Length: 88
Image 1: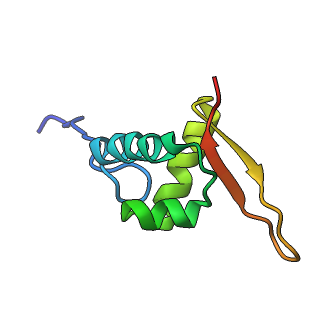
Image 2: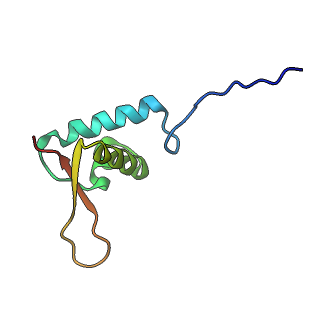
């Protein structure tokens, strides 16, 4: 019998299909159009995304230069990032 080398990509980034991942990034960019700074948890809640998915999309968008991030002013503990649309 001949060996079958067929494969397909079913999912990317912990359960999100590629089209869902792309859609999530587009929705994040649209949400950040209002020039407010938001935490990843706020973005995830507003767009009904899992926190992990939101953080991964935000990291990619930041790596691509589409958004900016900075550490929040927080007293004690780990300071979360604040994300915003990059100013032109």
